[in-house]
Length: 356
Image 1: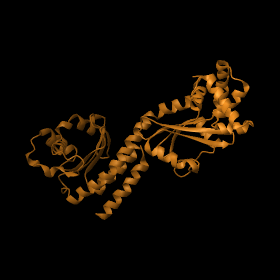
Image 2: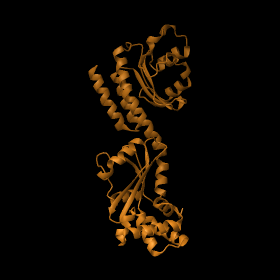
Image 3: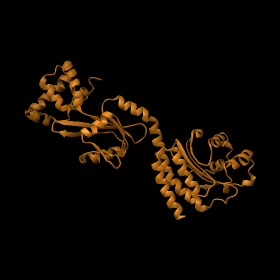
Image 4: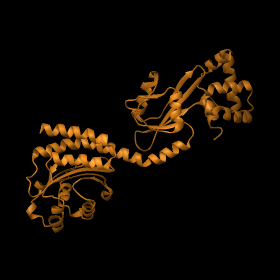
């Protein structure tokens, strides 16, 4: 049994490597059939309220076999028995729960059993969420011996690992369905935009983001493609992603130039984020022209606003402009008064949104 368990663990790792490759996954799950010495095997990932939309991985049955099954699923005595006993989440030798010779369903006995080589059945059905469920079914025909308690235990162990894999598969599948749309939306936006997961892996990036990452010295790990954030902010970055919360970093590139990295959670897939890189240099000239026209800003006030838009504090603005801190504060107060804003955050929000 230890040999089989080690093979099952090795198989689980290969499933993750196969990602969404249907044919390869069918081959890998057929190795499960061989390990259990079964005549047939199938692995199913299905919406809980629409089993006809299931994904079925199997090398044992043809498409016509599967179409026949889903048309006659109500006649599956083994499945009905499993569900009636409320055994979800447990590996069960289903044929031991009933007297096979007394089954009086002709569709099951005369059509399903021979077609699906299903004299003996070992199966498990695992609810993954409110949306999906995952099932593994192993069959042996009448020429083979019944399944054993040891094999039942092995299937239970296998299902524990495969449940995690199935959730990962479903998340990836749902993301891939949206991938084309997300890619189009990202490319339509000329500003640097990307999608990262909760571990900081870069999943999608438009051309502007790909160019910006190098320019702003935000690199990717060659091993796992995680974004390498400067060490000073790594803890904040990782904690925010792990909590699934939005966040913002101001990254200094030089004394007078800072860029802003922002991320917000996406509704789907859960745990993924839209990542935005904002360089005030790209926006402030156009926006400053609007501010000057609307609020009659002087050249000095425009200079102050430009430096504030680059992420500098009031004291840093004063130092760079060669004036006292008090003079700098006075200039900022005049800007707030002219624009009708309450503080620097309100002022910058007005600047960045004034042309929208």
